[in-house]
Length: 59
Image (tube, rainbow, N blue to C red; front, top):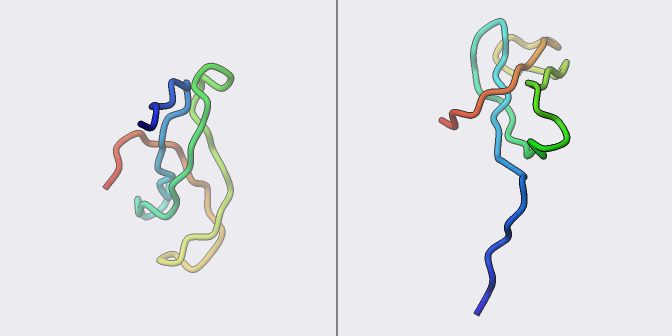
């Protein structure tokens, strides 16, 4: 039988701060990085590089 992982990693979504579209999925270790993540990534709906913020709600 396979054993389940007991790690502090959680699945997060990255939302565009301009249009609000969910563009990326990622994982983070909530023990090492308790604050919310912000990245500058490409949004295919805005067609430019915008700031993407972390959200725990997955669409």
